[in-house]
Amino acid sequence: MTINEQPSASHEQAAPEPARPVALITGVGRSIGIGAGIARQLAASGWDIAFTYWTPYDRRMEWGAEDGAASSIARELADAGARTAAIEADLTGPDAAIRIFDEAEQRLGPVTALVLSHAESVDSGLLDTTVEAFDRHFAVNTRASWLLIREYGLRFRGEPGSKPGEPGTGAGRIVALTSDHTVGNLPYGASKGALDRITLAAAHELAHLGVTANAVNPGPVDTGWMNDDLRAAITQGTPLGRLGTPQDTAHLVDFLCSPQGQWVNGQLLKSNGGAAS
Image (cartoon, rainbow, N blue to C red; front, side, top):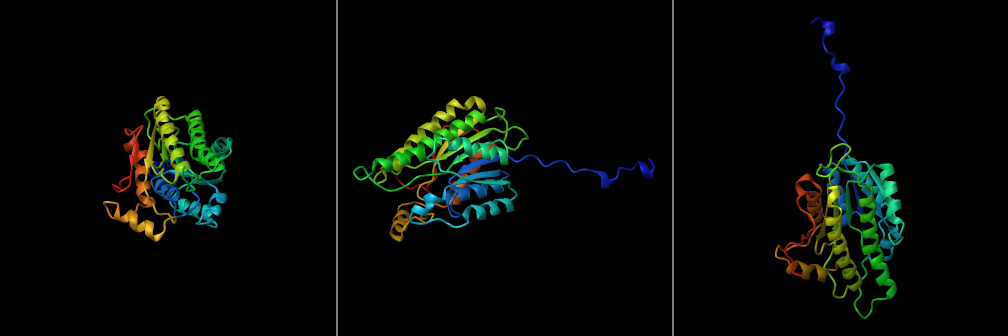
């Protein structure tokens, strides 16, 4: 072989990077929230991230809105190598799911994993819950979750049994964050209980698509809503002697969305350090 016949390194092309699967995560409105923690973990694990947020909700809560949170979170995810799409969406609207999926697909491509971490959560009990509050909780926590899962199922194009990360395919994942807190928190707990049943239905009704669906109860996670007395009481009542963190939840969601988590399906998983209900 003459020197002219030697392969030239300068003309060699690197193999294309494998396509990153897309995760759609709802409820990523605050940088210290569970949704943001999940987004960071999945981005680090090789996912592109579309996420939703709704500033008016945070604005009317005690903690208030975090200025620039969506942009800041998007930059963090981009630094981890993820393409991102931040979508502001009012989940009380019955057409929200369609619009969210349209925008996520237009900007990033088909969605492989759907993580539902949004919530309407305003404390009230049996006697003082208003009809408006009850309806709003079910519109956001239950109806919107059903419509998002339904839209995901209608659009999912992965091949049954395939693995996330394979170009053009991907075993589907649905993970919904739930809660067993009901006493003194009736509309929140009741609407989350209904979400559990919807998620269980998805585990069976979407199985033919290669989709798994699980609910995760992260227990009490301090994302700025606890006072000192509540922190102390929960810490004392938890065998591991600490509060939950967004990272604790994120690690479990990351596993469920991985190829290794494919055999876990139709489960309600508690990730709460052993805290009693």
